[in-house]
Image (cartoon, rainbow, N blue to C red; front, top):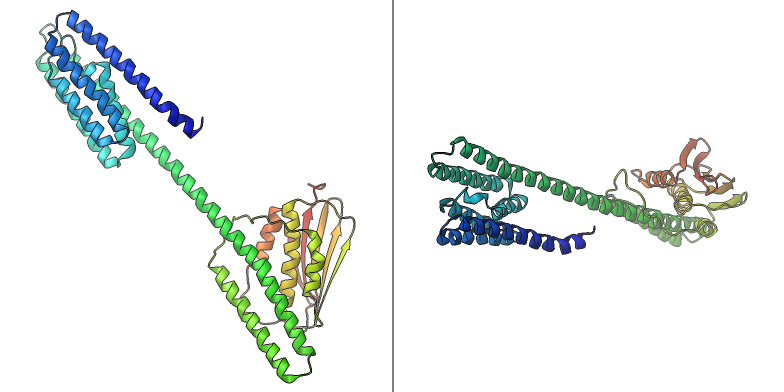
Length: 386
């Protein structure tokens, strides 16, 4: 049943309960009047009974007001002489525990304890008045039994309401934590996409500018291009510092974006320059991949090229290769180590993001660091191999 359905059936349930309790109370009052009770006693009892129903209705929106009305009605019933048994045993008196339930489920625990103490005091007062009016032929222990039963009922209602309230609070906390986790996951996804796209573009741009600076014969132009390349590297560092403020969760999952393997040739070609030989090769028959595996493959190539161009002094050779089998595709980005390693400051988190993407797609990632360069290798399952 949905929440809207519960809201629509709840008032009808309450109306039926109030009608049934009122009818039962009316029948009892009619029977007591038939047994010889005075008419003023019937009206003196019927008035508080009506107030109990009013208090229960008011407690639905104003718990303290409804509880106060119910407590006042019960006090009037206690002090009203009644034939046969205690007036609080009327069916309409059930409305008072309902008001206590409603109050306990909405106010603080300390306030609900005060309300429980008021109810307990009312039960004690009820039984003292009933004991004072007790006929000689009725033993006094009956008052103790009645008071004990009332205490158990009121205490049970209070405890049950408290447990239900804590369960609802735990559910709300779990929902808040779920929403917070979703927000954190989305922030991590944005961070990864910014790193993968913008950082790659800036790195390729800087590499091409450096290549142009080396190949130009004009000294002034070479210095100007060098300054531009340095500015680009500063921008890259600033981007990494900004992305660091969007802290990723260790267990966050990347947001899948529609990236195709068909974009790899253009991606590789855009990274090539006179000082950066970047080539692409594909071996075997291409097989269908899941969306997450295809995204992981493209991002692996992008990260491998970015790292080679960023960390190595040119000239640099980078080879991108896809090797297909029926069960998997092996994505390999290999560089020759360049002239030397470049000091680029602290390490980024791009490889961690790629490892998470590959793992999420059901694959594995390995990094080989040898004397002749780095090899970034991702093994991703095809749909036939899953």
